Image 1 (tube, helix red, strand yellow):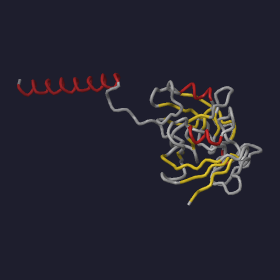
Image 2 (tube, helix red, strand yellow; image 1 turned 90 degrees about the vertical axis):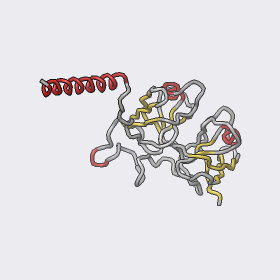
Image 3 (cartoon, rainbow, N blue to C red; image 1 turned 180 degrees about the vertical axis):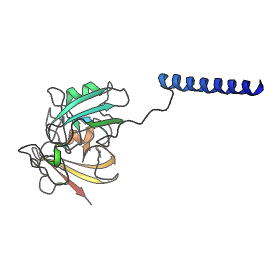
Image 4 (tube, one colour; image 1 turned 135 degrees about the vertical axis):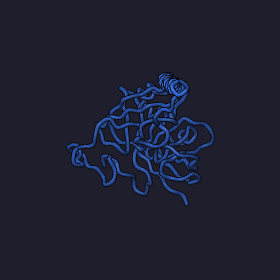
Length: 224
């Protein structure tokens, strides 16, 4: 009887443990898998351009579909790349409105997923010239002497003129010139981002043209 009673007790404990795990998983207490590996590193910001939700990119060719998820609120936007920029993914205003938190212009915790596979055999869409090692049309090479390619935008963060970068380490000094008006901003990299250079609000104000949130024609120089 004692042996039989022990077996019954052990079975009861195992059943109870299984129930706890099942309930914990259903209630969100159990450990969950990490988010999908992101195709981009660093913060996601936006260009303030109008139109339907879309994005530009320095990594993915025109026509690529991406899903951008804000991990702080779980909101997601599915966008199509419409052109090149200086960021891995740069949302337009409508796409940013789908995922942003009120009053925030940067999504620091995010996942960017590519929804379509690359062309079979490594091919590219007709008419596109892809530079070696980059999935980007070569329509806008860097200006002479520039260390970054594509448009420059800003993060809307406060403070003295500064920048973040996915290419240069903290402390790097850069000189950014708007070729349309000749205005220049000298900034220091203060942290990482998903762009070659992403200005803060004060730095953008030094070089922008009225009403524009993008500097399309620019040079970025590395200061020694």
